[in-house]
Length: 240
Image (cartoon, rainbow, N blue to C red; front, side, top):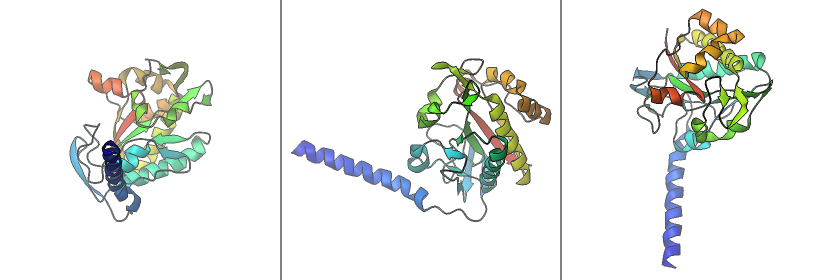
């Protein structure tokens, strides 16, 4: 009986903690303008905008990250950039559903699994996958575990070599982000993608346009950071 009460009390406590963590996201309303302080590696966010959990052709990747950890906040300009870019992708990639990943916390600052993402100007994006000429969507639903997926130097998934990164769709998305960012008075400051994947990315038709525009991709990364950026690409935005 005593053990049952302890278990019941623990479950109630966990429920209350989780509910308390989720409430700010349920009741948040975007209004006014955001102010980003400092840098992605050492900064904060004032009046952050919470990205929609779901859009017509895109979705936040994890319920836990979004509601419990509260990692879906952005500078208002970045928020509008993402929404405008996905609207453009409805035309350029009509068959594709995209997934955006972790952004910033409500007030910015340090996060559980990121050294950066501190001022609302950084976003992780899930790499789109394909199997043959068709989108491969099974691994899109892994939530936070998606960060643990590994790809070889040509972009093939280690768990299933028939599944590979769709570099052309990825490039179309980055191009849409670049166009939308300019309208918000922003620019893409930096893209982080695993170093040995960049050549295949820039060989894609739209990847060539990304290179022509001079959008900066990180040239060198520490082994740990490099290894972590094959399943997703990280983008830092900045004021123009």
